[in-house]
Length: 260
Image 1 (spheres, rainbow, N blue to C red):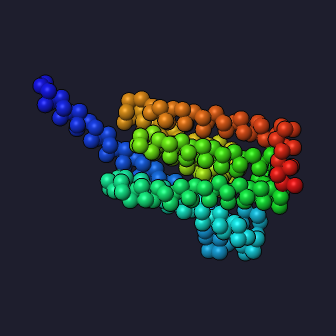
Image 2: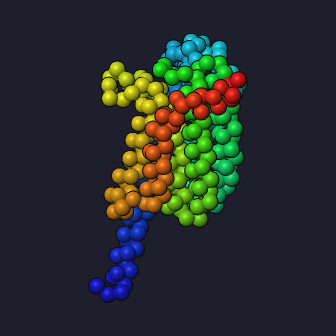
Image 3: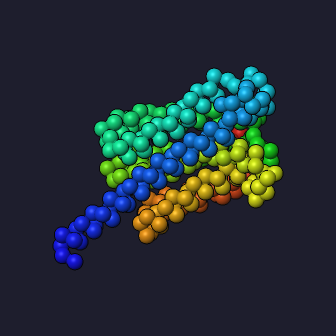
């Protein structure tokens, strides 16, 4: 094969890989929005239509405070912005992607602030899943927020390296699937006995999305992308550590200080 033939083949392979990545990232971003909607439908989005109860046990939504509504708006905005950003890249609208990137940065900051305040307020009110204490459970949302912010910062720092950037932002968003995933796990627990109800089930659902990224990298690239390897590895390793640390006297004392 001559030089032109090699170049044409390389271009074809690169184009095929890029098309596969656009399709994959678009599909997985939409799937994440679906998980969030399903997970929070009985307790928030479709509360009145499904005759469900809020996470705090209210059937009429009376205890959905303004902070909870702001929390829902901010986190939903991130999910919708993520889909928008992926779609803009797929359509080669880099100019709009950069503009929305500034908006996404502001929303990410809001997630950290509002998410932290909401978690601490829930702890003060004694809200926690069955089998957890308020102090132990507080570590889960707070650690997720810290992990989210770390991956977003890393993603922003790698914004000129597209492959790194989109994987880091995707892994950051995986962490936001744990709360709705926990609710889905609770819904399915009696049907799928292998899926623990509550936060651990939510982690497993988030990990399924991570494994989908791992499988895609291997199938499309023949190996794991470094951002998937290191970012995904950190995402997985910290989960059991969070669970173990939540019951230690050190965390229990710190959580009590936060809750008051």
